[in-house]
Length: 146
Image (cartoon, rainbow, N blue to C red; front, side, top):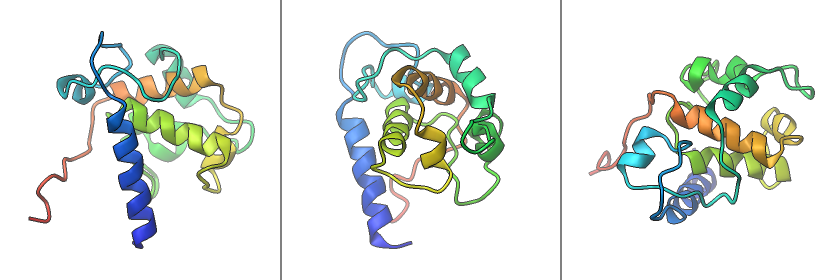
């Protein structure tokens, strides 16, 4: 992996974490978000709805004929390709910011750019709420290289 994608990932993570601050805990945040004290969204989106996000995650997109779960697996934890990210339990803001970047053309991927281009802010919030609420198969990498 080149330094550019690693830098982009680190930057996106930093932006997502920087916006998390105090306040009431919205339901759209994952258990890991809540346990870490993250309670507000830096994505500037309306509140997401898990049930609506689940429906969207299973709906076939007009542009590609694929649904989110077709590529990322049921509940976002079984991608069909090792290069596709696991979304289950991911931070709400990370998913929301990523989808906004694909939609707005600031981040490009052959499938994701097409999938996201017609998403509304509410749909992005709903998808982020759904995948953020799923059980995580992600692992903490703190201290891995020490």
